[in-house]
Image (cartoon, rainbow, N blue to C red; front, side):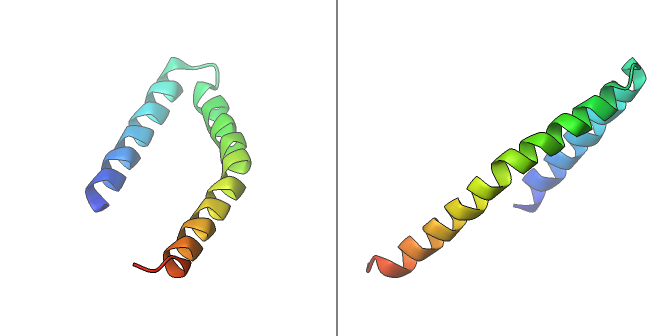
Amino acid sequence: MLIPTIIMGLLAVILLFVGYKKGENQHILGLKSSVNMIIQILPLLIFAFIVAGVVQVLIPR
């Protein structure tokens, strides 16, 4: 899981740099958009992990 995390981090940094070089605050707009997506998706993601964990415990193998 470490290598995919590093790859995604590098991709994010590269895209931020491209947005910065493009000008017109593109990098700031991209960051604001990502924060809005995080706010919308994070609660669903948390509940999905809770459900997955509880299902693993409740269903016998």
